[in-house]
Length: 225
Length: 121
Image (cartoon, rainbow over the protein chains, first blue to last red):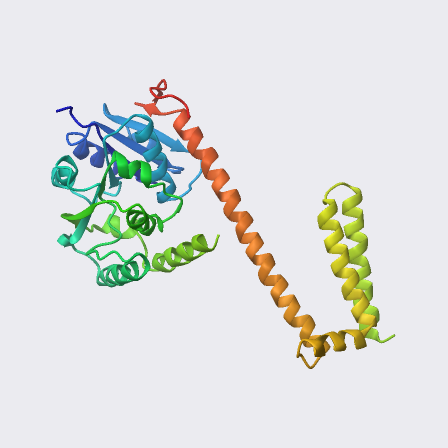
């Protein structure tokens, strides 16, 4: 059987403190790491180097959704078989990747979503936990998908999903948009337990609870226009 | 002529004058200028023909002429906000496309630009 070409796509915005470590951990699990520097004002682009690393630089900050779509475009043009989306802040464990891609390799799913609530959410702040639980209900009402975790950045897509999912939400609402497109395109999906560890850095860098409101506004305005 | 009529008509004449000036300089399209001037000419007309305004209000079940003006203004403002959001969204999409294509055109490996391995779309 032909070996699958596995790409990891990382959207990075001002991640100079963690990016090197993340790339080091990731390189043994994938064939290519596509880092999209989303207009960082720090040294992220200098630190994003390595034998398997390709760096794409946005001239201005567009948002995580736009950066992921840029990575997806690169992966499509370079004929990736599986694409993993991965965060640059060091919250994920690279050792979860083999389990994440297994359902795709076995042709049991088109897209695999990591779930911290099936796995572990280490040191998760209570307010974040509440926001995520509300997000699960909101997603069920909006897209009809019954999931255990909705804003987890660790996912794996096969090439069919990669071609079907075109992210148009530039900012954080892309996570909901991906779920919407799973439903619209009737993609086979499954959830896999993963570990998400909240560090002081990731908590400071990560999504603020108020962002949930921004996501809601983005989703509604996108539906209108 | 009341003070309010004088004040409002002065403002409207100033708006019409500035619009005509902008059109002459080529900053405004013919369609926009026509619609914009028609709108303000209509407002000017109703300032002096308040009985017509009241009749128009009554014909749609509104008791006061000024209420009709307020309702129409709110509808117009809603429409304009919608258009602005729509245009912003379009501009945003275009900027995203340009930045994305630029990033894809110059992939870097170890800080060096690598040659295209893929056909340009």
